[in-house]
Length: 532
Ligand SMILES: Cc1cc2nc3c(=O)[nH]c(=O)nc-3n(C[C@H](O)[C@H](O)[C@H](O)COP(=O)(O)OP(=O)(O)OC[C@H]3O[C@@H](n4cnc5c(N)ncnc54)[C@H](O)[C@@H]3O)c2cc1C
Image 1: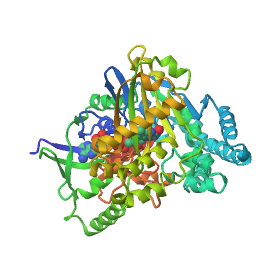
Image 2: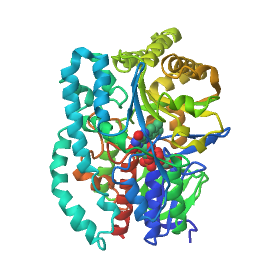
Image 3: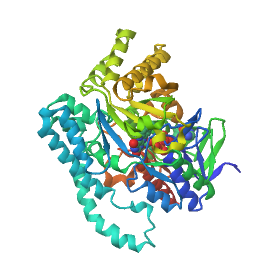
Image 4: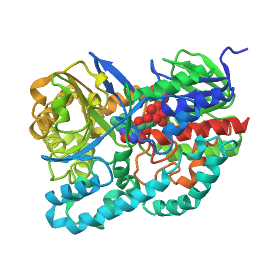
């Protein structure tokens, strides 16, 4: 008898796998979660360095009608604070407080692009419409986290009145699926303005998703103690409910022929059902299926070839700083979650055709040419800046601040630099330019007060969570997206061609993120229980 035999095994202890495990444990399943790292959380993760607390992945959370209902449904308490957002261009910074801040955003854009006032107004009209759609979409606690059998009040007072509005809104949302860059081209003539509105989104982000960000800015919250607390509390609940978790264990092979999997130490585990809540390409590349029914094999191979040819989303470069400067100095300038563009010029083709050309012709580019490109890429970029201490002052030593500066980055650039043997030098060049730029543009005190620094690159993300191309939200949005990307069909996103194997997390449904990873984690757990 195998000591490692479980009703269900969940692979991947990110927020998706943790959600599945907690729900399966609650249902009385003998469930094991296998996680490759020494702690759970994946891209929902906080850590400490020299007394400074940072978030390694997502910087703040949006409820989306999912996170808080999931916590409530599992009986989990999580102390949270509001995570206020600032947006800035050059010397002008606005602080998003409520819906009226949209007017401040309008003024900010018009100040920098006065000739485009009408076009700006048209975009803002669209943003307002999308905010109304968002009110509907996330307007009630997601029904998958409610006990529909007992909560009649929810069914009659909330769910039933909401459903027709939801169906109407979904139709509108699905029509706004085109890449935001293409959509903006139909409205805005000025290239720079288009960039300033959209360059901090992943390439080809669906219009609805990109323009909904103003709603999300109002919705952001932050767990006291760091974003990673969310993963901690769900993990603790899963353990409390009898789930088992095996850390520092990497699944290297799945054998779907006999329902087993093997870890990096050679241990073989048996499962009745499996939830794969980690990288999708890894699953399809490392699963044996030769003895399964021909139809299943055929579907598996078809799905595999569709997925393997696609790539993960843009990744991110993050600079973590320890700064000998009190939080008040930063607070006087921005809030703790700040989307900042030093130059109104915009990136233009720097991160698109120019980067592609450089990568395709890498051997013809000298180091100096790459650094010249880097100069322009950094100086014209948009940065997501997070200052955890401004959300929760307990996260930094007294009179000091932790500052986290990040921007979207291309995995293959870092890979090529690494293969060319100057990775460390490249990182040092990025650090130098970023600190210089942010000091000269928005936080004048920064440069002289940095007492410690380190970075995460797309390669670090790939190493840490085994995410293809260092992706941080699953599949690239470049069409066709290889997984379900239509809300009406989201319940099917957790199916794989193998009847007793389900998938959950950011590779399962697009666009993904924390709420969608939680939702698919729950849906996969439900499917397992139904399948028994
Ligand atoms: C900088 C940044 C900003 C972000 N901002 C936002 C945001 O504003 N809003 C939002 O919604 N989302 C955001 N995200 C994305 C969000 O964090 C992720 O989409 C989400 O956390 C993914 O959860 P997951 O469980 O699907 O995957 P992951 O977190 O990647 O978890 C997968 C887990 O599986 C483990 N694993 C992998 N392979 C194996 C194996 N073979 N065996 C065992 N274990 C394995 C990994 O170690 C990892 O713990 C951001 C992410 C980053 C990095």
